[in-house]
Image 1 (cartoon, rainbow, N blue to C red):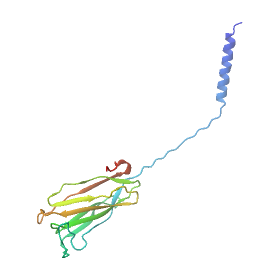
Image 2: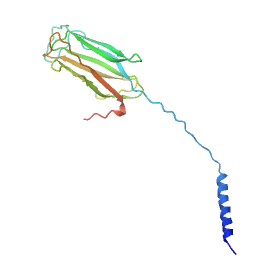
Image 3: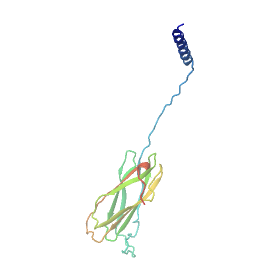
Length: 186
């Protein structure tokens, strides 16, 4: 007897039974809707003042024990962003002389939604024989949303400064999201 047709029929029945069982399985599906809202990096100047509020502050090696109030340090907002936040300050020092040491204290506020750190800052060139200027930054520059960091800008008029001269320089500070700023090297 030829068993090939019987084996073929048996194989077909097993195949149909398998397909039938697979078709009879119940199933269900799950889905995920995903919405991603990104944060915002935004900083501004919150408050500022100059240390010259009376007798002229002096650099080391100079003396104003008489309490003379000759020079004047003025700090004013210069540029506002679309939210009416101050993004540029203007510092004007009037009637300065060698030995005058102004310190401008200012706070940078994180008005964005994610933490930021100071990525870098630049100071445009100025006559460094007439002025000495530097920025004092906090050890940790990270500022969380709604918080502020305190900075200091020191300006000293040096002996080679010319009478009736005007000196100008600009500082630009760039803040970035905290995870883009490399750690400070020790």
